[in-house]
Length: 325
View 1 (cartoon, rainbow, N blue to C red):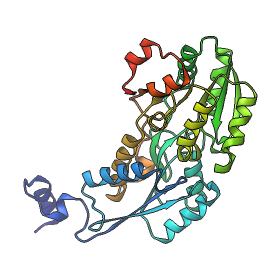
View 2 (view 1 turned 180 degrees about the vertical axis):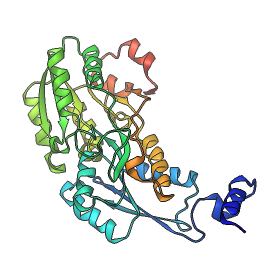
View 3 (view 1 turned 90 degrees about the horizontal axis):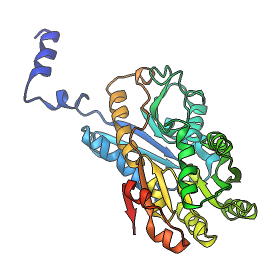
View 4 (view 1 turned 30 degrees about the horizontal axis):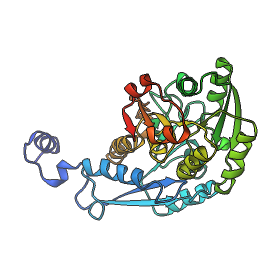
């Protein structure tokens, strides 16, 4: 049969053989890398979300998919070596997280496709040429939703703490996520910003104490692999020092932080599977536009509010997509 005729029949048939339905040669096993800096346990929901998205697109572990996972266990300096391990395992694409992850993978490869999730300003970071046409081996989902998001965090905290004048920013400064934007927003609102730089897991107590000693009245937790790993002890410290706190991701509020405002991270990892699928089918990362989150949800932990002795305005409760009580 003429090849073009066969392809036309395959595309138009209602009942297709396996080789036509999944877009992969019969018997092909795809190797996908998964790299994050936290522990396997702390990011299990993200691994499962990616796996779910891949299953929805016809990939099944043990049949046509091998997911090679590597974790930094809080040691970001290990990320380049772990990325190199994935390359030696001959993965066809690597799914990873924020800026510090993408930078680590790019240290060891500029050719193997990288699907980033939740990166800040990927153009400014040099990961992509532009959002519409990335132009290299990196594509995926950006965390950017405009500079107004950081001002929104401060405005929400100001409703909790009237007259708010000094806020702590807790996170890993070297991860290059959010601090510059938060500083700009705080200046515009006339709020002093005190940085608690979290360089390693064992620094949490001292980084938090540095903010407390400067008499902060609220805390913004900046998302990163270390704060994600330590989200429960961070929430515990905010309760111990009676400080209302906010973060981008709902996972932090579910662990005891007062509130969060931003996209649902597991949804982004499900969505990342669509990039993996396209790349495995032959698409080039250079041609796959970077997506930005469009849906944001406010999560309020009313149990934490009661323990802190703060009032969450009815307007915030009405807007909340999730209330924890």
